[in-house]
Image 1 (cartoon, rainbow, N blue to C red):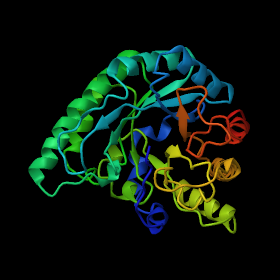
Image 2 (image 1 turned 60 degrees about the vertical axis):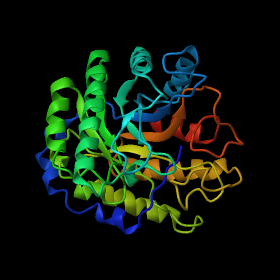
Image 3 (image 1 turned 180 degrees about the horizontal axis):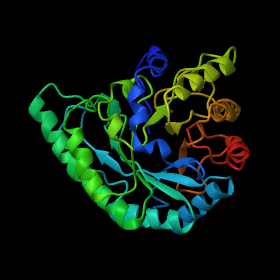
Image 4 (image 1 turned 135 degrees about the horizontal axis):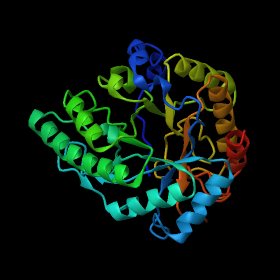
Length: 333
C-alpha cells in the first residue's frame, strides 16, 4: 500500500500552534485512568481474512507483544482524486469487518474502525474537487458509507471510530459538522479523525467536535543517523504541546534509507532490506513520545497473515523483524 506524503517538513513544526480550542473538548478526560492504546493498524490479506483462524493467530501474536488495541481498516475506493463516486472497496466486506471486530474483542483488544480511501496511483490526501457539486456528491456518498460503518461499529461494540484518514483536500468542508452529528446518532464510542502530519490538524475546522484528534506521523528524518534522535525528540515535544492526541499511524519501511521518507512504499523505491533502521527509528520515536506523555500509538502496520514480513521484507510490516522486540519492550511496560 502506498504511503505518499507530498508535503514540506515545515508543516509538522506548525502543528504546535492553533490548538487552543482543544481544551474545550470533553475528550480531554478520555482514557483517564485506563491503559493507553498500544497496538497496530491491521491490514487484511486475501489468505487470512478478518475472522479467520489465521487472522486470530496474527492478532494473538500482536497481543503477546504487548499490544492491547488494533485499528481495523475497511477500504473505500474511487477511481481518481476528483471522482465523486466513492464506494466500499472489495478488500474487506462489512461481514468481514463485523467478524474482525468480534474476533479482536474476543481476544481482549480495543478496536478502532478506521476507514481509508484507496485512490489508484495516488493517496487519499490527493482527493480534491474544483467543482462544488462534485464535492457535495462525494461527501453525500462518503456520509452514507461512514454511517454504515458507524452502525456496524456500534452493533459490534467497537471502542472507537475514525471519521476518516488524511482527507486533507476535503476536510475543511462545512458539511462535516452535520456528518459528525449523524455519526454520533449511530455510534456512541470515541470519535476521532486521523489528520495528515503536515499541518492538516491546524486547519481542521471540526477538531473541537472530536472526542480526541489523531494524526499519522511520517515526517522526513534525514538521510542518515546524524541528528536523528534530536529531530525525533523535537518533533515529539512539538506534538506534546497540542494537548490530548492519538498517534493513529507511525511507521517506516524496513529498507535502507527508510528514515529519509518514511511514507515511501516499495512501489516507489527499490531498496535493500534493512530491518535495523526500522527498529532503531521506531525505538527512538516510542521513547520520545513516551517521555512527552504521548502513549496512545498505533503502529503502521500489521498483516492478518501471521506469516507476513520476515528479514528480507522491505515493506512497513513489523512482523518477523527486530521491530517486534521494540514493540514488546515499549508496549509491555
